[in-house]
Amino acid sequence: MIERNLPLSDETPTPEPTFRDEVTVELVRSSAQDADVLFAARVSTAGEQSLEELQKDPERSRGLINFLMRDRHGTPFEHNSMTFFISAPIFVFREFHRHRAGWSYNEESGRYRELQPVFYVPSAERKLVQQGRPGKYEFFEGTPEQHKAVTEAMEDAYRQSYARYQEMLAAGVAREVARAVLPVGLFSSMYATCNARSLMHFLSLRTKDERAKVPSFPQREIEMVAEKMERRWAELMPLTYEAFNTHGRVAP
Image 1 (cartoon, rainbow, N blue to C red):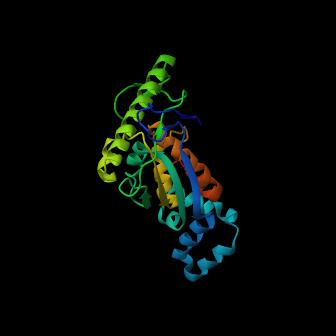
Image 2: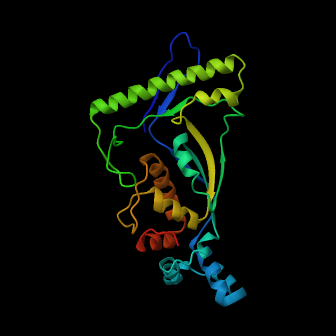
Image 3: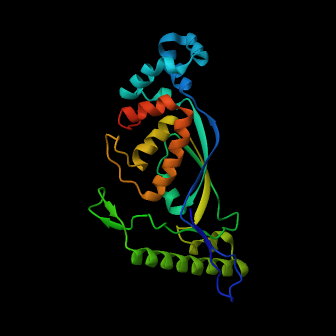
């Protein structure tokens, strides 16, 4: 990850912007394990005896998890919870919030706090050239000149917009009004809580993976978030994660 602090002009005594090319994802709380799937599934046939699944090794029921995933019996995958802290550009959150079923969000508010000058600038590895039709775009490497143009244009726009934001605050303008001048490349932060089923649906749409039955064409920046969330979930529920991949990365 690259971070750069660049000074503003001498005439504008505002905080120095920070430019980032990476996102932050932290698992802050979880109640999620493969056994959660098993007791939820077996209550339909075992009733109160399904409580015994809490003490059993879920490895012995790998076949049941695969059956549920393959035949898309989805509700047993909802009896768990994961809460992530995420720091990413605002434009990522605008895509993220399209995922509503099984998700809860609380995001940093520009009405109640002064927003900090942390902005997104893509790394040199970020593909810049877009070709194809909507829904089936392909992206290709940019030239050094294109990357230079992107970096300079973004950093200049960010410095100017944040300086105007600070000027309005200094003039006594309300934060909720002054924030309108800030771009979607500004970093925000939020807590996002989900269950395994809702996370699988998110991953099926926001990652590009050769194992997927249904192709997806996510924006790279939200895919960066999704990849980090996926790694943490794989550690919590390895059997469920394996079944997800085995059966084409389709949410049950």
